[in-house]
Length: 129
Image 1 (cartoon, one colour):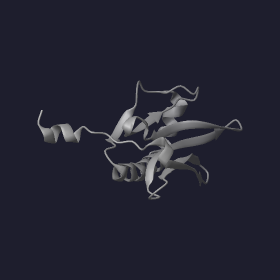
Image 2 (cartoon, one colour):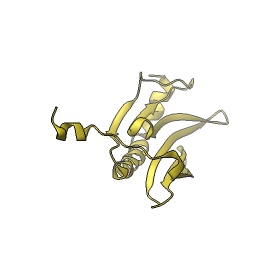
Image 3 (cartoon, rainbow, N blue to C red):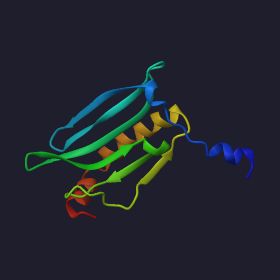
């Protein structure tokens, strides 16, 4: 493996002590909500990590339908069933995180994915597959 190939595999995550968490709540009228958090770098104020969860209200409670987060040094998607279990084995990787810019790109991708695919995510949640 060349040095260039090795450099491409280097992943990044922030030092947990260098991040301030801020809540996120986006109400989607008639659909549900996106709830989560943004981890901002204390020194620069830049987005360093995040977790966003699409939720629907069912029988008076909020239920997770889909989630995009930056755990494990990657931006990835989790899908859930009505009974709360994760539908797919593992997770769907959207992009590796190699620097803070990847986190910002991942956040934009996450918002679009959760909103644009809202109906498909809810149907999958209802069917459980």
